[in-house]
Length: 518
Image (cartoon, rainbow, N blue to C red; front, side):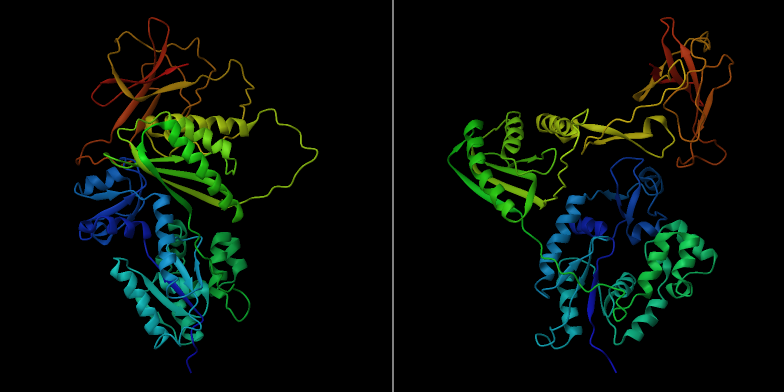
């Protein structure tokens, strides 16, 4: 006897890839990938079937994929685009059920409560097909499973196409045991280990206990097993936690007559910003972003984004940054309409410490100073270095925007003289080194370099003619058969002025200067 389903799970596989294909419909039948950034060393995050057919897989470098397929299509998808898309889908699903819970772990997954909807539809299966058809008309490719337990329906939805209606909890458990582990998007190393042990489906994994799996493979693997064994009747899973998307607070200001005077525009923004902040406070939220759209009379729309150092309802801080930003822009035409949008988040209350000692460095004041610099020169003006797992020294780090100010971590210098620092050029510079130049060792003995390549020992000056350090490509370059991989032989070279330079020679005997010693 069939039992009415208690929960439905909607799954949008490879959501960033679907966002890209909806934005570029002409790419649907061509090899397409989503990359972290449009750079040769950027990793590939998502691929479509056409790209898989040409042996392009997630995790490959963009340059490696282009060497296999020069006509490969690529795009990036930002977190803001994903968040905006999931929020829009959430609003659409509210037309089919008042109880929708978006997944916090995997964007594009939703749990829907189907109970009480049979009086509005011929059957729950007809209701599910209506949702599927609604999304399919908008060029989405969803899968929808109606079942009895949230985690089990989620696993089944990830391996299902179209609509699937489960009649009983026993059918749900039986189908769950046949799901291949390789299709769940787990850590590839973990999947490989399980495959060697013959654990290829969730049914094989369910033969073990969570404690056994935790001891051998860690907590995430044990958590996966616990989710497959949880049942709603045993209280091992939570019911749907419905959420209602909250629209941002906006206001539209008509400028009559159109004006391009910055001071008068700022006066109008200040008057309405106070109202927006009050509305946000009534929601129990604090402001995090201010978006200002200026509709010009004879030119394209101009958009500015303002962000304070920390979420705040302080009007003075918002207007200070807005004033700084507006003094940097040039309006080529009078403004006839202003559109303000204020994004917020829930307030985070902190315990007051009566005996709190003032810090030696005021990080909050430093963060506010950085916010002023961002308002003055743009968000990309304040960056910090982040290490990357690449073999070329100039690619072992990248500059990313700084979102928060952290206290410095001083180095413990227990040796003297102190370490030397290599200042790298943004790219190697071609250099004609004299043949008589040979590295010296006297003044640099015992002073290790701070910047060093992954897997290589710290380089020191050396008087012998052989290279101090040899770096070879790990293999992403495509070379003809019988030829060697790209190689660099590094040496310290002292100029007649006494400056130490870090240089290398390639296979053709050409010399390039990588950096200088500070």
